[in-house]
Image (cartoon, rainbow, N blue to C red; front, side, top):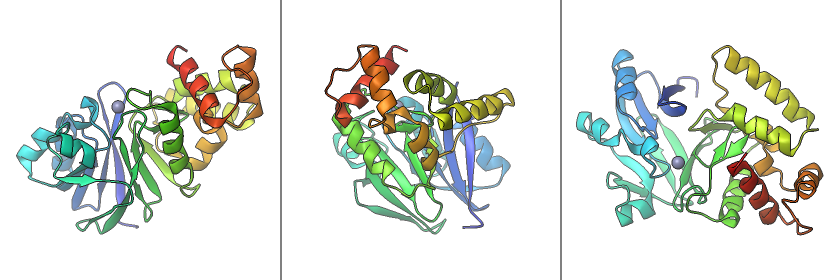
Length: 263
Ligand SMILES: [Zn+2]
């Protein structure tokens, strides 16, 4: 995939939209605002061919109407939100197990249903690019808040993501990494890979660089929401009386998530 580029478009305080292009055609993931997307397309003389949406929050779909007023392209998003009308702009409803083919870029995307942050959240995995576009499900060093889903649903969603190849690049939708890693260190202070990651992330941010995309491999080593079986995490939670002697994956995940909500 030598001619494919994945461009980060920063927006609002800490959002990232992802623009995938081949110097001619482009698709945009989660455009919460049209202006920075249109500016980039114009500046680089790219033609928009499709919009991909992961979930219904305004900072992910707020720019769709205006983009459509410039180009009537297909809008992919959760089938359930198309059917319920929660995202009225979706033209191609997507569900688990489906593979989209975006012919302008000659790319396939597998659809993963990953409920938890919202009840109908989906993610897009492109094997040819070793890349996952996961919205607000998995973050670098963290995961999305459970606004609509249960801990059990989110654990199942994160397990689905964890089963992808370890070299998968994780394109999440926010720069929350430093605060996530600060929390992760409170949960698992002796994790050497995590300590190292925190140092590198600090250097990156001090130099004005993004920490996203991340890599799944690094998430598996350092993200407390993927590490519910870590003895140190279980021990820390129990020490702080945030966990009883019930230590199954969902219970530990729920305790970590609960703690993060008020950290
Ligand atoms: Zn969201």
